[in-house]
Amino acid sequence: MRFKLFIITVLATVAMLGGCGNKTEEAAPSDPQELLAYLDAKIRQNPDDAELYYQRGKVLFELNELNDAITSLKKAVSLNENEQKYYLLLADVYFRNGDTKSSYANLQEALNLDPENVDAYLKLAEISLFGRDYDRSMESIEKAI
Image (tube, rainbow, N blue to C red):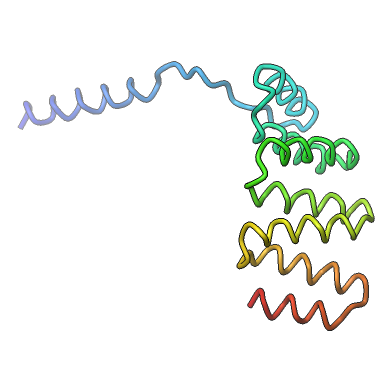
């Protein structure tokens, strides 16, 4: 019995020590301004990483820095034209910026990549509702359903 308890204790200790190893990847800051600086530094290290530009665009969108968010997201799209989430966020930024035409165009791009993208249809419905095109809004909702 004592031997089993000893083995269990040793295994638990090894498991705990194994989980405490050094991590080479530093944690991203939670403050938006610090996160923005962190992402800028990462982009300088790896300027061809579309995901970094997307993350930067997300932070800028949250900070309501819409023109900078658009620039960052357009760069993400230029580096990877096959990622739907880039077009969806870009559409959100354009919509908040009052550019429904560009928002609509980006949602269409997302739908070209995935014709069954529910989020894109719901956002199209929202834009159509905003423009008082109720028939198109209902059509988009039906497609989403």
